Image 1: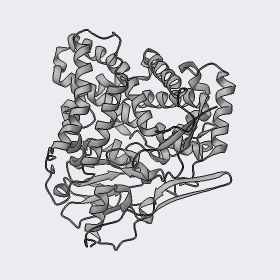
Image 2 (image 1 turned 180 degrees about the vertical axis):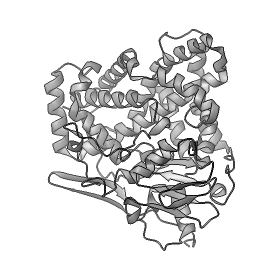
Image 3 (image 1 turned 120 degrees about the horizontal axis):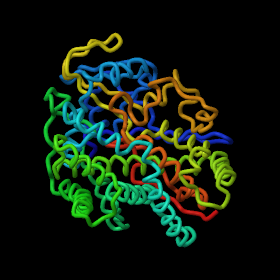
Image 4 (image 1 turned 60 degrees about the vertical axis):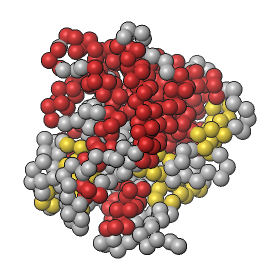
Length: 470
């Protein structure tokens, strides 16, 4: 018997034809205007399922049905107002996000605010600054070439999960850059599988918060959740301890943090704080780049004209030599593929902010503690801002064209823009180019792709693929 409150996920729309591809997206929500329970149950599974057709247009909307004022902002000038102009009032991340990540990241930069954030943000920003890329890029190149050698040994037709493969690769890269340590495939798998399990066990939205509790309620630490957290934290804590005990190479991000603390004791970066910041850099850098690369393989596998243009550029720029950091500025089409991937599948598709004080966004009066949601998923597919918003068109990012300010925010924007933006973008381009030079990635037969927004945006159940030598 089907329970009356059971909800089915929406149909997935995916279209392709000669010279075009519309990648997987959920159909628009069409329930009645006040179908709050159905929307809440859908949002717990996948927040992208609750958006109606009009939500994608340049408009702001609000809902007051469950005790909390919920506002969705989808107008670039108002996005700027929330993320930049009035960042002081909308600085605080949503309680659902903070509750979901506090067990993993503690008071790390991603979920901290106030004085903690103000103290640590300049420090972390300097450490992952684009000027330091030459210090870290060789780790990206070496780890990806190791994957080339491993992929070259796969038997013809072997099926692997692209999400797990990219997760292992980015975990290895971030381990070497953050900790100066090689973690190996077993520990990489622990982090990837542990975080996947963790995402599946936390809610997208807190009913207690929506109902009026200002900070929601702490997550119930079930045995399964404890195991998922332990799988991730045990690896990070172990490599962090090795580094702090002098057992790893110098020159890592964590080494820079330690030296800054030694020079400036007032920063208050004790062992716990150092580990929290290391965990934050690790998880932010590993998960988001892995998701981006996974979606890029999916898009290229369905767009042979784009894949052909990518291969031609790599051959023209690099010849038979493996791509390096020095080649990245000339890999313009490769960059365009990554930027278009980030448009269609932003790694963090929902940015939640909690209002400290009363305010006004456009024509909406904001009350204290209201939840403001800015969705890169909606902004990036807004037909008022983008031509063919649901199509995969890397060419839109070529020729020096840039989108309207605050209409393209895959790394957020304003003072809380991702500190590792250039690191992650360069890593994505470099890893894609090195692997695409040698391989074609094809979806396994019978694969159905469904985007799923939990903490990050992933293909539900991973992405089964086969690897073909070029």
